[in-house]
Length: 604
Image (tube, rainbow, N blue to C red):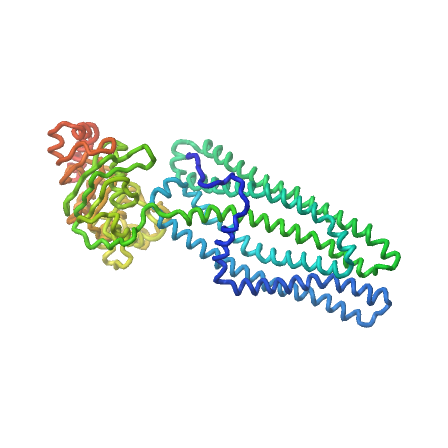
């Protein structure tokens, strides 16, 4: 199980950055009218909520204490009307902000997904898949919560606070100022809370990402886990990650569990001051009971917006921590991208040349060092060498999954860095050792590289690579759902689907990276004819340890420690008695005997 490394300043304390909020606001700008309407509804709701206590106090002074019953029923109806307005306004504003929030989140998620799709392999090498998934799910969810609920609450709470302060000052300035004596205490508490909660929520976002990374790796590798009996070890590691997540969330929750009661206590102090200072004037008759009742009601409500704003600040901190991670990805430019003035690669003949190419995945650890090699149009070039020699890296550079640090790679004389990625990759066909089969039907997987292909062309490609026989036996033939990663297919069947996919795409240059390594010897012999058809008329680069694939190559390059140490045909290299001959003796001779036995049985 890997140890996950998260990018960014997850644990570093920083204030909320206004530029992050401005960037989030840009996603709301297309829906500004709906937001303005929701805010207008919020004004209406706040006004109706402010009117309730005032009407209640008015009823006491004008009707109850005055001994007047006439007209009291209209005041009661008006009081109920404020609740009706509040309910309708709340419904409308909630619906509008939910609509705005969902549309904005749709756009953020779409932009993020499209940007991730354009990233080069270095981006994915340094980030566990679960961490990337966390950006698209839980981090975006935190922003969604802020947009849907936070904006309206901020407007509503500020309006309520302003309205309560204004009404209290208009009724009795001295009693209002007494009520506000506790505000400095609330300000001190809020400042301390703000400084602590950001760090807590940074940790929460980091731990959630680690949980997702752990889950993704554990689920993907469950077969290996069970094969080696590693369930308990993995459970222990997940438990530690889960415990860290629990502790981070509890730390954030503890801050609220302290802050909210403290605000409540300050509110009780404010209420006590109002009763202590306002009671005697009521007794003396210099302050009406109705006004005193209004003050009591508003003081009770005064601290509710403050508590709500604290909760919104909680949402803001979580959303800011999430936005940092999302915009970090959106701001990460792909290391491999079309350069200004890049041209479309015309239909290629298939001439490929590496000239002095060097490359390293990490600084100071070169994988390729001045590699030069070439392939003529239609030529089959094999790359062999010990594990870690750089064979797969050569193929990755040809496909421009990475850019070389030095040297030039040309196709038909054109520097690959001067052509568009799409035009290059449309003329490449790649079959890997572990080919990805997508959830969907067999037909959809074969058609993946050529969406306009007809059903007849799909079947023809499958027949050409000897895949039709097993596909026809599936429950629904080509329309059989193969499920995620092709779990309903055997390893050999998945490889045959990959061969059919590559053949249907009709590439000019074909890359086979250990394409038959996971196929049993018997199946390999059966697909040799399919490989011949696949390779016919195409320039091919082949990395393989299987003798049948390497022996037929027009040219073999032997790599060792990132350099080309030998070049020639199979027979020439054997005659030289160098590294290739040594590898042949160790790896290929036993396979040759096995292949002969299988061929003998097949002919019999």
